Length: 173
Image (tube, rainbow, N blue to C red):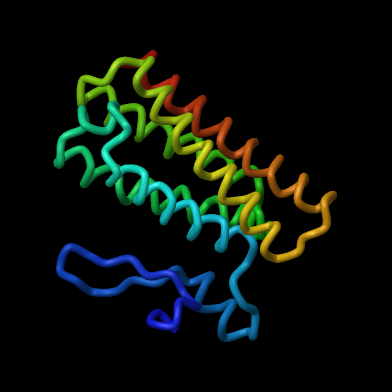
C-alpha cells in the first residue's frame, strides 16, 4: 500500500515506517484516498519542491535543528486537513488541534529568531501552497464547483486557526 501510494507513511529517525490509522482503515474498508489526503499529498510535494528551489528567504533563516522540529508539525497539519475535509472526528477538536499546532510552529519560529513578519510570510507561503493544491486536486477529481468551494472554505477555516495559533505564540514569547 505504501509503495503504491495508497497510504501515507512517515519515517521515524530509525527509518521505520509509521502509518495513520485512519488511512489504513480507509483502505481496509475499501475507500481510496480522501480529497483531504490528496490535497495534503499534493501540498507536501509542492512545498518541498519550492523550499528546495531556494527562493524562500525566510526558510534560510531556519536552522536544521528547527527544521527537524517543524517537519512533524507540518505532517500533523496535513493529517488535520485530511481529517477536517473528510469530516472525520469532531470538527471543533480538529480546529483546536490546528490552533495548538500553529502555536507550536510559532514557538519554534520565534525561538529560531524569526520576526513575526517573517513568520507570517512563511505562513502565507504554506497557505498558498495548500490552496493551490486543493484547487488542483479538486479539478483533477472533477469535483462539482459548489463542493470545491466548500472544501476550499474548510481548508481556509483550518488555516485561520493555525495563523491564530502562531500569532498567539508570538504574543506569549
